[in-house]
Image (cartoon, one colour):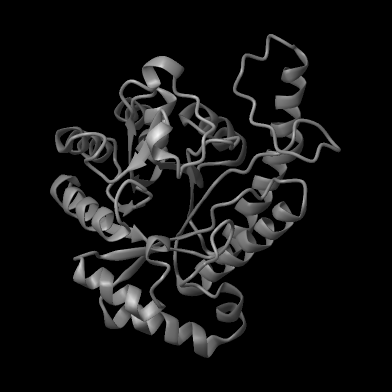
Length: 313
């Protein structure tokens, strides 16, 4: 396994300064965003696609530092029915095409989440039993069969055209694909190019065991995010793990995203990476630093140190 970082956490740095900092940290690669919810601080996707000279200069800066692009990331909701979805679909297409130009084989993104019925304006994450009311069964069928699967069939076709080999879908909340079971539903429909970006942090607060998930996924693990979460004592015990407070309200939340090692100890992380390697995954691990309980720099340095000690080389 090789260690990279999701570079949005260093969005205050210029492209070249960010690359220099990655070298200082001992990283081997970068996972950079090309759009979606991110402002894409380091990847001017449209400019690079339009100008071969800029594209060549962009790649040269990486080569000069011995860094690789672990993946291009375009996380967002391309299935949103409004202007947001239109933008995210455009960003997704451009990022896939840019990956083809750069020779990057992996796209990290999210499955998207549609509304529950034609004409609805708000995406609907159905996580309650569809027995009550039974109309939820029709809503899920609409989301999957009428919206998501046709869209993903088109994305797989585009990836074939430009030479992208893998989609790694993050098991994020408020997405149609949010755990291994939902990943396999999409994968079975559109093919093995679609796999999971196995991010333990989201599975922790959903009550799942990421190590068991890794065993179940096997070759469907397409990417790993090094990201931890902590269930907050005394709060989750009272209110459970469903949490609607903003992420900045760390002191009152039942769970928080934290630096690697601040939620689960290094023994846990060693076992996690060992099992992922045992199941056949021997590729990039990208640090995603979203800990709001400490400074960004402290979170990055602590997480890099923890991951360097635990990934399976």
